[in-house]
Image 1: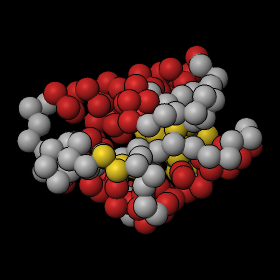
Image 2: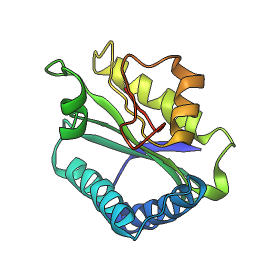
Image 3: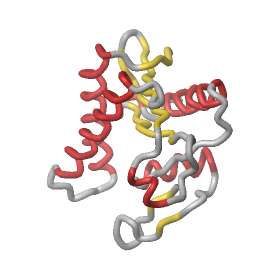
Image 4: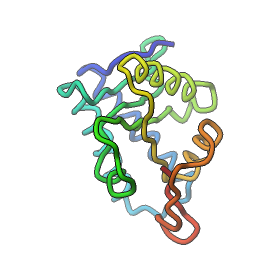
Length: 165
C-alpha cells in the first residue's frame, strides 16, 4: 500500500470516496438525514482536500493500492468546530478527514493511515495533535487507539450523543 500526498488528479476519486463513505456512515449511524448533513460534510471534506494542494500547512494524504484510492487522512490547521470546543494551541495540527472506503474497512487501512500521519507529524517536529470525533463508530475506533478523550461534550449531537476531542 502506498501513502502519499494528494494530487490534483486525485480530487475526483477523493470526492467519490467521500460520497461513498458518508452514505455508508450515515446509514450505519442511523442518521435521519435529509441530505443536508451529507452534502455539507462531503463539501467540507472536498474543500479540505483542495485547500491542501495550495496551502503547505494543510497536508492531505491518500492510501492507494494498485492505483485504487482506499482512504484519506489530513494534517490541518484546526477548524472552527474544534476551536469552538477547546482552547487550541497556536501552531498545532489536527488529524482529520480520516476515511476508508466501506469495502476496505477493518482491513488495517485506518491503522496504516494513522501510523503514517504520526510519522509525518514527527518529521515536522510536532509532539502532539488534536483529533475530534462525533460519529459513534469513529469514537469507538479512536477510543481503542488513543484511550479516553481529553474533552467529552455530552449531548452535543442530541441526547446521549457526545462529541469527543
